[in-house]
Image 1 (cartoon, one colour):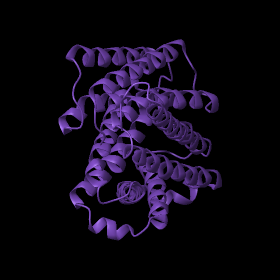
Image 2 (image 1 turned 90 degrees about the horizontal axis):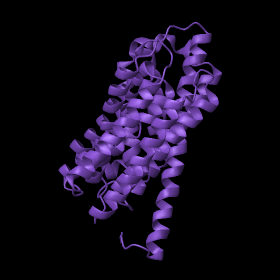
Image 3 (image 1 turned 60 degrees about the horizontal axis):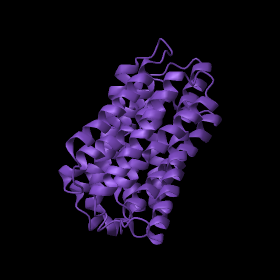
Length: 317
């Protein structure tokens, strides 16, 4: 994609990327309050929730999501035979299994708003890791580290915000960083897969295999399924399966058309969406002054990141 400034076609393509990223951000942002709402339903039913329960719930969600995508994919197993299994396995491991082991653990340790804010850290991981994979160049050192320090300042302000005393925000932030690291590695691995497999198919295999693995980890919670999956929870699970299938498919498709550094920088819309939707739909979530300041700082660093990458990256993944 041409990066010439001011060219009408370039501007149109950028706006298409922004709209696509915004669509994904709304879907992913809605997942935070939905998951927390499921937890509140279980609490009202006096269901004791363990990590096995959370991972069983996640496994069912992603298995359904992946299966749905594979059913509407064209010749998925033919594409799979043409794709190196080490890359496909690595993508499933990073995108679904490890990312969501850490993700659901983070949601048990920190507020939905803080976890939403931390989802922006995937952009920082891209800033650091993409050059190591030969997909971008580092900008001037002081600019890169200046962006990282500024982003860390925004997160620190959000962590400082008083919240539910049962939460452990510092540990939650650390675990969420691991989750976004896994998500970034999955995008980089998809760059190895896309010559032989379409985005929808790759997402389907990744979600399905990762979902089955999560079900295996959460197997001790399977006997509680009749109580866990009440009608409202079933509806939310189906919606979350739709969110995963649609958002990941669109995001990986966008990564075949636009520089991933641009898309990674547009991730600032995910925390904004997640924070606002969490505050709007979860009664216990409060939009504190520190959360607002932290969100604005992190969003500003994303704008700086996209400007930096716009200058140094000349190719797409």
